[in-house]
Image (cartoon, rainbow, N blue to C red; front, side, top):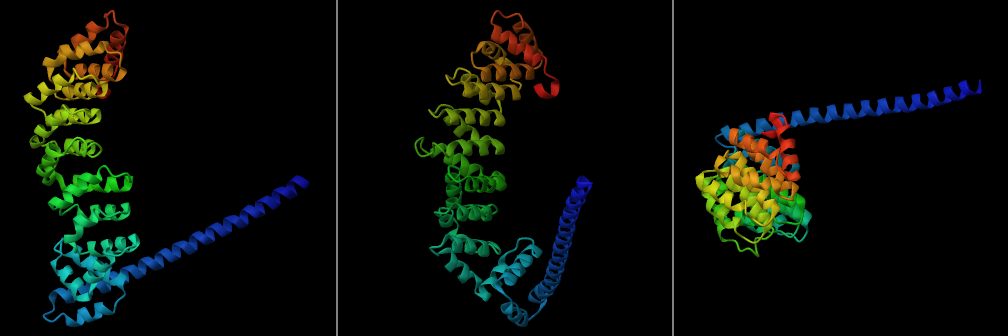
Length: 349
């Protein structure tokens, strides 16, 4: 009987907690619904105001009404205006100037407080203003400001901004590095020539940390104009750069690239040899089959595996060499050949 009474107390307590949880959920849902309704009402009103700004022969009344709105409402309206104009920011910029938002953003971006600078960048990014300050703000001392400017800069990159973004790839702050990388990748082939120039001219000392991520971005673009600077970094002293350059050369491809990769199979560093072997496999460059087969005897697992997988990608010539390696007196070579030959096609390819 005591157990049953105790069980009833526990259930009663849990039941009260459940009722409280359900009530909290209902209140939260109702609040969200109310907020969503207010947002829709505001957007409808803002769209009517935007229509007046764009179609009226004398939009003074619409501008006067917008001036009376709070800053957050003005910013959201300008954001809706720019999106409705498919990125044509000139009208939004003119209205922002009329409202004094441009000067306000400029003052905020010049503040000693990083929070104020961040607020200024976000305010200016609504209509694409303060483009002249982009390069300077990309060098801001606070990583969140740099990251915000990098995200804003993705669609319109001038030479100074590009150089700053390349340097940001060596930033100690991961958020800032990611924002710079994302901005550069979003720019697509527009970055090819500036990136090629940077990789061709940056010194080994200055580019020690930034070059590797630049080479990785170059591999994502894989433009033939990047082949010459890739060749340069295939021969530099930085091991990570040589490995990244080997991957870049493989993504660009061609006879000249394949020959350079064959040279890298003689590199003293295993990571470089492995990347070169992987690239030769992707290129299906069968003349390198003999060299790749020799690498099956390497004492570095990474090199043996890369060479074996590359041989399998070469088709019949590689398959023959892998089967021959099964009878190799070197146990490392025979074991790796067996592992790769046993892989299903999807994994091996």
